[in-house]
Length: 264
Image 1 (cartoon, rainbow, N blue to C red):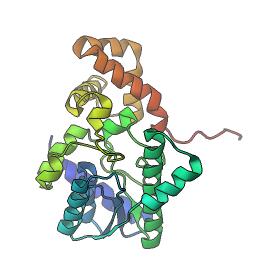
Image 2 (image 1 turned 120 degrees about the horizontal axis):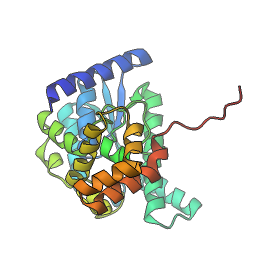
Image 3 (image 1 turned 30 degrees about the vertical axis):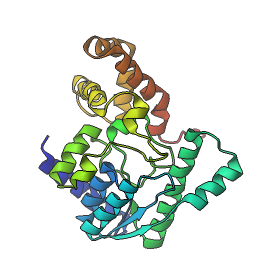
Image 4 (image 1 turned 45 degrees about the vertical axis):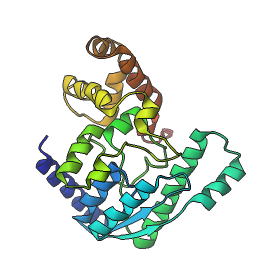
């Protein structure tokens, strides 16, 4: 991929969107992971960028250290907010008793704080969810999937790794196992049962076969098409294809605009 051209397009996108919004800054939730590192690095090239680092007691210290090192290297304003008291209050009020529910509470708590911070600083909340995560529905609606704009939503996870190398992001971040860091020992690929490399092979073939990117929703619909799924199963591990297509089908609502009743 021509990452120089991709960088130019993303920087232009960020600059134009910011100008049209009549605001003059960005807010990014920085986790110590590769996606937020790429986004924060790009945003800092365009305008003042505020970073929020929001760990919990189960968060990896390595991620916290990497997040702090990144914002200091970028020389951007940042604030660290520990979420434990907020999350515990939510858990008590809702009786949340599963990892899924607690993980959603953490993700949505982070976004509440990030949007409040953006209102305070008159900035835009910038999303950090990549295309692999969007297609798989690997995110919390109104949590980490929420944003005013997203510069990396058309880049697969494996593309993000290569882009990060081009941007000269710290190797500690690039070489780290991808994780939402919602509970101790959690990892993306552990949740999936497949590597991003294997998943993205299927996704890349899908985009190329279907005529490149016509929007995330079109990609998801292609993956759910019965005839196309049979073709994929002939070329790739059938269990992997079934995993991707099932997740795409079950989670496509996360990529749709909120349905509105037609009354006129």
